Length: 118
Length: 111
Image (tube, rainbow over all chains, first blue to last red):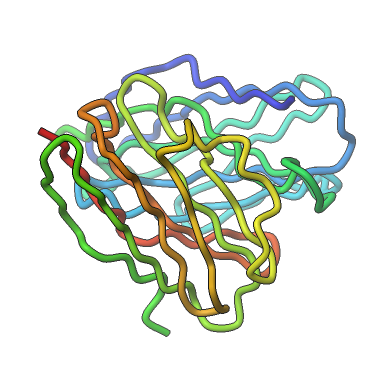
């Protein structure tokens, strides 16, 4: 079974600065998807960014980018020019490519609570 | 599209009562997931459906929990009888490919 670990329960960053959230995972599969979801106080789960394991290029979405290290099974999220609205719980998630059984589910880490200081 | 719609947003019920949570997935999505979120256990998958058929219900905690998907546009999660330890936020999510889209969740409090 796949596991996802977020070792930082809480992080803080100054507005306009850069912060990196860590995520590691364990899998025996060679192809899979990785995601970062944001959960603000409204509790809505919002997809921030995704990465396909077969792609070597790191995904980027505006101020959000990832550092995907497949061999190390590491998938960190970098937030540049942090804004007050970035304050939220961030979840790293894993999903198998192969449909069937329990593999198709999203497996989540425990989350990292990000505080943005003005 | 309105996104995944869950109702109610909040539910407070007494122990022993039946609770039904509802979900309308995004039109055209063929996979539907029910997750439960608690402080202690984080986000856990309870059950998921593909083309209205339950594929994996290994996360359903016990027989008090049941889920149905009678058609492509509606699903329910029922707890009968409810217990205080069922208090949590319950999310429904739908997908037709790589990404899953979540509803706003139902916060259930069992007193």
